[in-house]
Length: 223
Image (cartoon, rainbow, N blue to C red; front, side, top):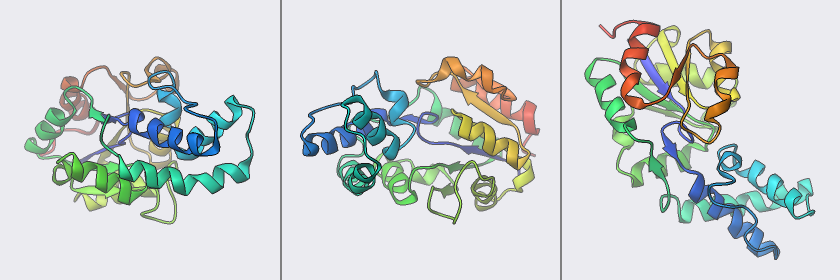
């Protein structure tokens, strides 16, 4: 089976608002108030919890790696407690998933979000059952850009790892797909959309309604 594997944050969904809220919870606890700004710091949010803490602490002149490590568990707890208030799927994302499945492709997710949080988010938003596989940052002993999480996501979705395409939004996804020897589609509607062409993906995606055709061009028809 041919499979389509999606990154989650910044690709399928804009999760930045809830991630930034969790980071600001930590900054308030430190006495700095709300350091990160919704919208303006979306790109930072989609690079992960530790990056948000690092960026915010540097902004207020209080960076220390030990502080980042100490507050990371608090950030994860705050995020889990309020994971889907601001999060929304990009226009057409779920329709595209449905069309790909109807065409016979296996569909899964490979994310650097911890697996439990990714599962929680998708479940609370009522879409976990749409995806045949979910591989997170801690599912295996390695994470993206190592190619094995992508390959495992393809296997768990019922496919051969050489016959998949990765849909992503970052240089991490670029390096993952390259290491796996499979094509990459980068979305242009996320916070870093203007930078995606420079990563030289096999295709750029400007709207999800174009995805089924792109997938067929890159890895062939499902059947």
